[in-house]
Length: 424
Ligand code: PMP
Image 1 (spheres, rainbow, N blue to C red):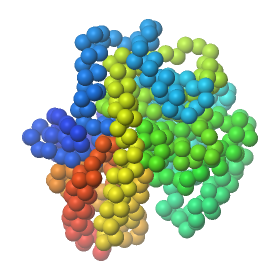
Image 2: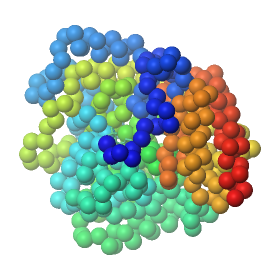
Image 3: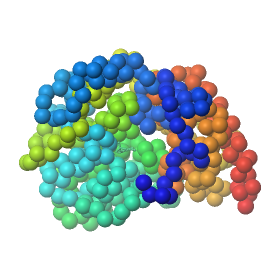
Image 4: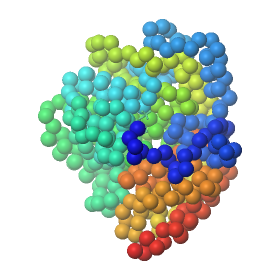
């Protein structure tokens, strides 16, 4: 890691164990975890079914190979294919979201015989050379060199500039016009559009519902594929939908879908789902030694089963809805919070200084204050000025209220601490 890169807090936090929606540090202090969902604990810490599945598989055989049959892998692939909504779907497992992006880009560029990709401004898709090449958020894209020719389009961020005043319909029309304009600049064939239905690292910003349906019409006329990056939005996190793309459902499912993070509930799983026709575009071997290892597949299957049987998507909708309402009430009395936005248990609080510009110092300080109050949250967005909340999907109403109260105090402390700067 580069020298300048630091851990999340002023004093590093060492997590030693977890249970449900709580984690403990090495000094024995307990925290309510409002960020574990992004750090891959999707359902709950120490979920007994997942722990048992991992232990049982580890006791049977620990190996990684794509050469032999593994029942958990087949069953998980079949369930994901069915859930994906993609007709005639094929699934390929990787170990991370980055590799899932890579695989999707490989498939799309091979299928379309083009290295031209459309991506969204402010996007994040991973840290490999190709994933960086479609990441519009420069703080997460350490090089401008890329194997891809990427064209960035508008659509996900509208809190600033000329787009802020537009209605949903006007904004959608403006973005479609922008897309058509950008396509007019392309060199012939374009392979695909890759987009996060709700931008994760970008600060939980989302386009109006239906935007990707409108994009799809333009893309479909030219045979351009749509890759939905569901690494953060998949598995019911957004509450109303199982996948983020479903908020745009008029256009039907995407051609490819990527997933990772939460499906393993802490184990490293990623993957890509694609129509068979697209998956079959690969004319040479492209397997992964580690992707789809039996122990991660067993964990993923146990986790997915738990998630569906306990309707955690419904829980995300109900508890997330209450939490957003509560946080909006908190924000009403705090000019420092410019916007509270959210879908299910994916909630962002954009902090801004008096001139409306991002306020990363306020976000960093609020993270420290929340930690002192026993709450872990995240940050992201432009200049890391947005607080991000993505708890495990099993969050209870009482825990949501407890966390909101801690965050309220943390924000007030930040407001008081930075009041001088705000006046300046
Ligand atoms: N896509 C999105 C939308 C992500 O949020 C992330 C991770 N933050 C990735 C891809 C990359 O996943 P990983 O960190 O597992 O490589």
